[in-house]
Amino acid sequence: MSHPQSMQTLITEPVCFYGSGSMAEAILRGLVNRAVVVPDQVTMLNRGNQNRLNYLVQRYGVSVAGEESARAAALQQSKVIVLAMKPVDAANALRQLGSTLTEDQLVVSVIAGLEVATIQHLLGRKQPVARTMPNTSSSIGLGATGLVFSEEVTLKQRQLVHHLFEAVGTVTEIEESQMETLTGISGSGPAYIYYVMESMIRAGVEGGLSAEQARELTVQTVIGASHMVQQTGEEPAALRAKVTSPNGSTAAAIKVFEEAHMQETIMRAVERCAERSREMGAALKEDNS
Image (tube, rainbow, N blue to C red; front, side):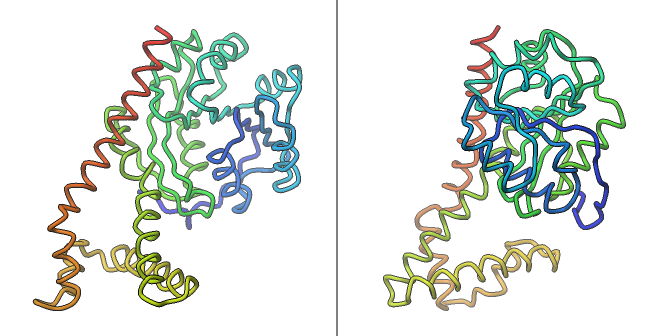
């Protein structure tokens, strides 16, 4: 894995985000905040939500394109096109996009379940494609992103994609067959942690703490535990054992988890997430074969 602290490269080439939802904004925020892209060289597109585009202009200083002619021009001029639309919108968008591309334009997908081969099939050409799966923590530079490249991607283009996503977190290059598992762990993983935090905060409030106290204690506990794993290099199981005295209060809590088969439940959730990602990809492939 690579860490963002060493990434200071400024990308000056035109970049176009084809889609401007929460994931696109999360990546954009990280890139702009870390001065990795030139804001006015970034163009954001969507299907016609002008209020959303106006917000992005005001918040980040990017360019936007709402009219069809402006959208087409932005796509033709961009060296990097980030696919960030909803899966249901991807097929039509890619069919239209394929005929306008030149062979040196790089297509970067952040769409869950959409395989490289399916993207190229919809484009109607063997375009250089990078399939990625970031998470929303990218917005604060603490994301985790998996990368897969088609064989058409050049070394320079690979480096550019690494630069883009190293700027917003850590990067792991994997085989495409592993992408759904990565989606189940890091792509959707923040939601699992938020779910646990919700439960801890609720327990704190029901135990008599104020909502603010319960939130602050929970947030700091999660931060501290994460940093302990990262900085000590120890396995989570070993760190858990160190704070779990026999017959103590922590041991009593862990016993509740074990009786509820919590570890197996979490593993099943990760597996189901990966399975659902495969289902979505298969549906896209079937619908457009």
